[in-house]
Length: 228
Image (cartoon, rainbow, N blue to C red):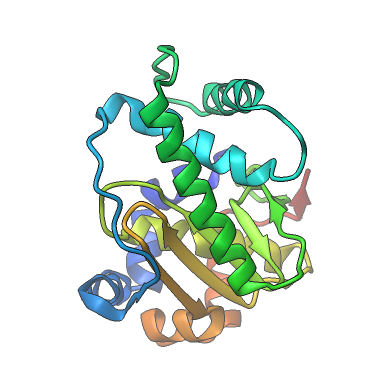
């Protein structure tokens, strides 16, 4: 079994054949087709600390209103990172600057969640059942019919970000749910956001229908039924 992030990086023949225009699409997004929702946060942070700060920010947003203190949230973030292969965790305590930065990122994520789905309870870590060679996995945030991929990093959007969103959407479709109608990428650090209709993005990058690409996806992962 492989994870969706691994699938997005290793099955290059599937992505090139089914989504020949995806790289061009991302270049257009990064050239200004995104929505500028915040000013970029200017901060200097060691690359080795970016994982923990980003994960703490996500966990702060996830635990909003729970009463969980920051110390416990940081431990939760470290535990989550420990479960991700090839991610090295810097165990040094978070300083005040890093904590405040994480809180700002969390506030921005929460703002966008409320913007997409006012008065809607978001689903953090939505579960997508495994299918074929793909293991069960978790997305970032599902708000109504919009799946959001959160990248609190000092870079533009990448094709792999959208490949991951598409993989989750295909798994959702394969499970019989089909609840995802829109996919979105959010970079709270850069202050940029991009949302697109799932079917329109698939057509724009593949010149095929959702069903046609879905069938190719199932063939690529050796579909034999939904796994748990």
